[in-house]
Length: 127
Image 1 (cartoon, rainbow, N blue to C red):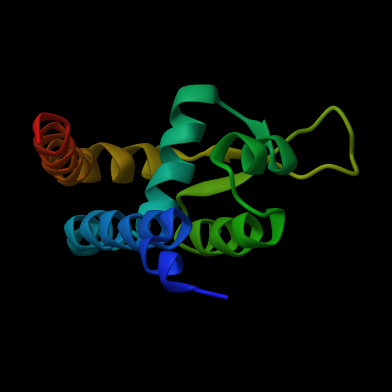
Image 2 (image 1 turned 135 degrees about the horizontal axis):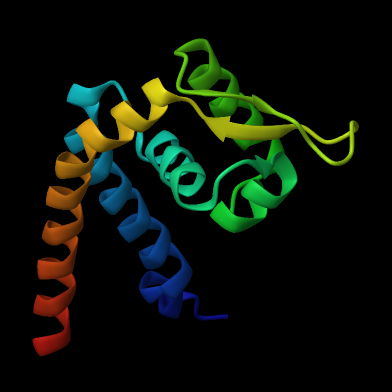
């Protein structure tokens, strides 16, 4: 069996590119004490308002356990807190005023990363 075609694996290339993009966002957000995933959680809560953890995980495409770890760190920092939920068995999160300040102060760094990725993507489209 000739496995040489696996050198051009689309799955591997996509994962590699995803790591590159994530590193860029993380680098830009580092000065604000945030990782890209944490920024995404804060942004989602800023846009959506109080949200059950499971729904937020689905929205962000994260495993619930990954989101729980991230949410706990954001809660320790005072950027999110538990909100009242319709179902007492479900954890619901909401952005705090400090969390709103954090997302707003980090937004320009996120936008810089976003613009860089847009430029890279536009360059790929014209090739």
